[in-house]
Length: 98
Image (cartoon, rainbow, N blue to C red):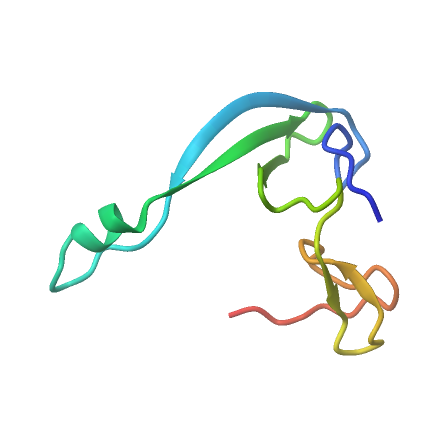
């Protein structure tokens, strides 16, 4: 399945690019303070916003393989779907995330 960056995953509205940003990786630690955060680096993402429902999507340049997202197997029906879907599009199973 190929994901179109210009189509909203929720409402199929038109997505508009609002630029790129660097998201800071890592976290602040008790002993090391901000150093863990600084040394973790940043991930450059392209940001899109839906003109209809106003949802925002982030796309990392190296996540896409030949224009589509990597796949994962549903633990319920064992069919593959895109890794960013919150629930299986085939059987509706929603994985609990903590």
